[in-house]
Length: 518
Image (cartoon, rainbow, N blue to C red; front, side):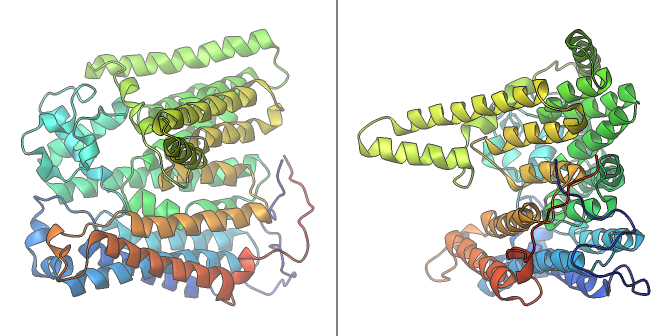
């Protein structure tokens, strides 16, 4: 399946046994540099992070200067870009300083999560304004609207909430549990934007803690070093920025799913299934996990009739829980209608999205309906993903069941025309607990993390419209390009020039030939 990392207490790859040496060689340096990077991001967020138009912070002198003066915005962009990439370097360097993936490495990783995550808890939302959509959806609930039938445009002064315009008419794609969380947050804060953001961050923090607890447990079940899996997942800059700085509800979704998988894998299937169903009631994408839970429940060497019986039991229990929740909130399974919204969007770096763009461009050049043909490409990607999911369900060894689940989930994510950075974060803990080899696999992760950090830093910046004048010379496109160039230059430095980190991206002198313990 995968090559193993050293078991707890064993020497990390590329080091020699030194009994007298500490498990982690001076973790303080990367810990402090990562904290500095996180602080830079938090300060930069004051100028280019997302604020609701109604936010009182816009009236504070510091915010006014950083958001309305060209110098303040430029400083914010530099701090954000440098801080984000400094965080990437700190994560890489922390991994390099581990001599033994034991208790010392776990302690250093937890310190990193705390130090690097703390400034993000108090930052202005970065890289996404979905949290303001959560506030709008919660207000729909409080005011008695059905969020599965009404977009936030049904609210008076909805534009003051700060949500992206795509949510004005779009149905909510979230499940019943997260609707209740949205309603509770908005009711508790009386729609106060900053207080609401903080409560949503606390909800995301619950998901982060669940990942910290259950990633090592799942890794141990697969003979994978739990401390290295924790470092790959929880200290990962993409994990921290998307789940804390960006306040995505995906943190709670994946945290509940991992906890549920652990209990399903340790013979407490009903309790685990309840947790996975709660994950589905946050974001329904984890419904993909259910067939694999049925196989876990059926047990090794189960005959096909037994597998179908336990698939039926798994689906029946999950649907019954979701149906009961829908009766309580009275909205039924309306979230199904919201699942189609992301499918109409594409992005250039998604393989299927890029292929659709190429097909559309060539077809339009010949006078054909290019985007109509591109839609066929997107549908083909979805069909291929369904085929891969089915293959992983019906074929493969029982001992590789969690890896099969991971590959099926990855197919759903990677064959979509739209891939967001937080979609990638869904996959990292699953691959980490089933084994990421210390060869091209972990290098691929380093490149992916670097790419998405560069992209996130330059993708969504709030720059005031009146700064986009020719006189000031700071249009939104220029601001994004400046952020992208700074982050990209830093990434290239890490890959090609940094004497410490460039070796992580280069070809190893000796191939990894060991195989895992299942």
